[in-house]
Length: 231
Image (cartoon, rainbow, N blue to C red):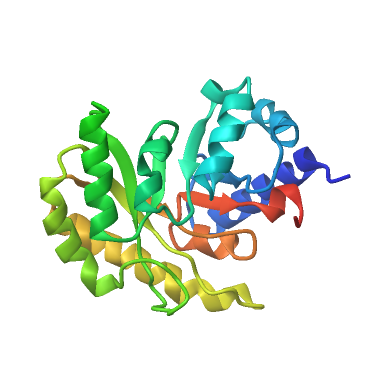
């Protein structure tokens, strides 16, 4: 059996060490426990252990867990997977933050649904394909300023930062340029002061490379197997 609480403590230790190396406070860094394929009863001990947010990749699975969890109101529910436009309404019923807005069409559909559901503010991040891999979703970095200009019309959506997925590397150090490029892009966008945009979150870093992501400025880490083991 995987000891998820022991794994969680080990993750916290690694975050603290990476934060110390980069002159940051560990308190400024939040972990989103990636719970794809993890049953509610396995997640439950982490709630008392201090996990503040869980991240789901599939809307249907997230909704089932939300309905089953007696701790549903004690944490934040993040959606981190590719979101299809026909699943937006269901996602908005439970998600506190959507990490993976990867097209202007999706952003507009979120806004439309939010208006229909009378939601004042839907919090989202823009997914940026920093490495410009054909197999990954997301905007290429050069597209993001134009997207933020177009997003001004989406009054029900607040864009609170950026997300990326780095390529998997045997040597995590090789992911550093990807994380650094996202941070620098965020800083540049923040300086321009786009309406409806705040550079609050950098969602980057997973089990294999989150130490490097912390050193490069991440404040949302998406960690699954580092806590729950390989599924």
